[in-house]
Length: 225
Image 1 (cartoon, rainbow, N blue to C red):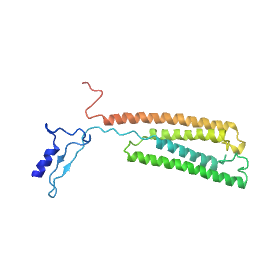
Image 2 (cartoon, one colour; image 1 turned 90 degrees about the vertical axis):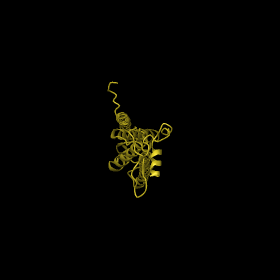
Image 3 (tube, rainbow, N blue to C red; image 1 turned 90 degrees about the horizontal axis):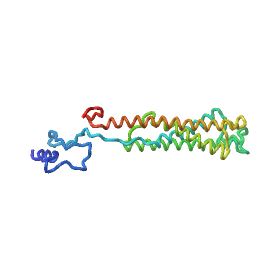
Image 4 (cartoon, rainbow, N blue to C red; image 1 turned 120 degrees about the vertical axis):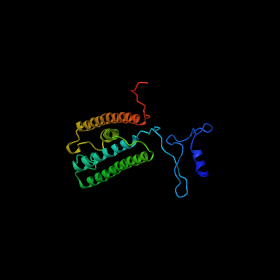
């Protein structure tokens, strides 16, 4: 009984001993339960105090978009449609010879390794954000970033490989017309713009929901004082 009275006394604030200023905001003073097998159990119970979580990371969505955009390029354009390969516009490695196709296939493989590493990095950053206790992204928040990342990949890949280095073009199979390269860049810019607008919509929706969730009980912004 003496131990229980002592724990009860330290669990309740008093005029001489107010609650600790550094106490966790989600805990109340200790609630003393009935003895269990001769022991007194002290339980910290949650309060209604709001706890605002951090918004999701943008890195994982962008990395997924970069990686998946590379996979779309490599799988669809390089392998299924075979419009071009990684170095199919380089003199000495034509894709219509066995030796040239072997070199292009090897280069495509290294390209896919790079895109796989981007997807892996996106997975790592997503797990890191989850372990940090961040909010889970909404569909609009996440897929807006994925689309933007895909567009960034198209623009960077198009400018560097198609125009600066000239190692391949979108349609090497029909003589490498410039119009296809320009359309590839325009498509990338549209993906960036549309993806970012979708992401911004997701951010606003999450902020509204987070504000509503963290508003103290009984606090109605529309109520009269």
